[in-house]
Image (cartoon, rainbow, N blue to C red):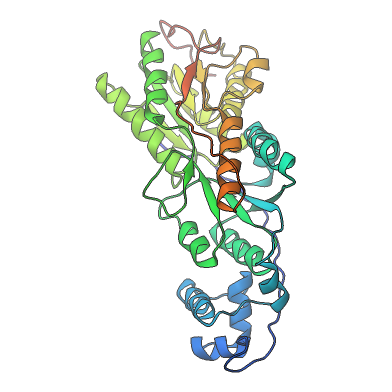
Length: 373
């Protein structure tokens, strides 16, 4: 029976709301009006308001034309907001595009926020956390936060393929940093450990040395850059050993999709003997799913996570994982963003790389797979 392919079930998340505002009327020599923007863009004033606040059913080309026209004319949704943009709020934004249940259950974000807050709090800065469901909501939120003058800068999470955020924030004039492997070609400076491939290669070599040949990967969303990079390194490392992945399944990081992916990999006669997960939370879900199905970890199944979060040390068996120094990366991102906001802060140099931490959840491959239940 061939191994499973495709995607595990995904989840949905609610979105936030946006506020509206008005600009004072004016002619040449004064601040432009919403009517002037609407006329120049060839739309209604209602469409202008919708473009800035992410509402209505505007097409993306129309929305972008309105925003570009407003930028050329120097118009923003309200005069007080325009004034506030020139004042320090001493607040930075962290926008996370995840289902709300994932944020609450995944300690990765607690570790990240701990690192960021450790740099902000002593300097009198606060962190404004927002959850959004998709790209349109996230982009609308950045426009709203900038127009209302509510933040001095933003920490961006989850670099994506054809990511529109760097260009958007450049147009808005909002300083930002992006969490992820260093990328000098991006429009926003990236903060993260380099040499991501070395850690993935360590994971594959570790499992191969234990005798595993049916190694699966439970990844995150396919459009995330780190998903694409790690999957590429995973496949390349196996290819160098003359092997192919048993399967690669994409998830939305939720518990439901992690459990579904695990059971899809295990409920076959020639099941996987090792599973690598894109983060520790999914690895913990996978261990639980395997144990409920009567499998022993690591005797019957080896499991590897990614992040090296504290819960991996509390688990039994303790989790083999990749340490990517989440708190330290968060702190470095905060320092870089503070510097970009004009603070006299020395940037942190992240010259290390992710490293494999071997614990109890990996062991020798079983001589023959235990029949699936």
